[in-house]
Length: 142
Image 1 (spheres, helix red, strand yellow):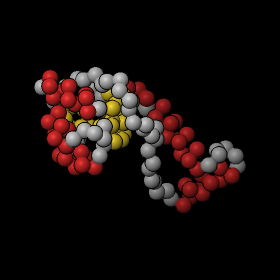
Image 2 (cartoon, rainbow, N blue to C red):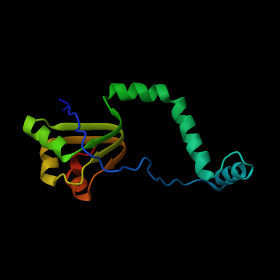
Image 3 (cartoon, rainbow, N blue to C red):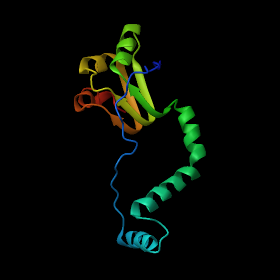
Image 4 (cartoon, rainbow, N blue to C red):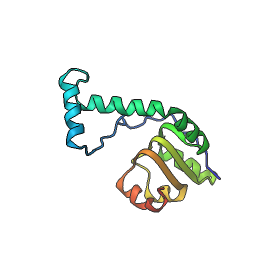
């Protein structure tokens, strides 16, 4: 059974809206990117790479939508505050967190509270939580 919980409207920590990734490219691909940048098609390498990724995501948008629906994923950014988890604990709910985007767990959430309320975490994107919470939930992170 999947636990459902509405989050509160309390102040949320400022979250970054992007995540840094590293990729390895062959020299020819990199040279072609630099050529397109030098010819003015893109402002820099990052601009070309972001554009290429967005184009691919647009190409596969129907598959993404169908998969999000089939897997019951929450789309976007979802924040779990201490109050949210305490409410789940009082209600006897064990959360199965499934997010496409970013899930964050408040910095004031204790390891004990997280272990008592979070059954599993599956995040396609980024999970922001303290290193102690991530370590405690390691076996529950899918």
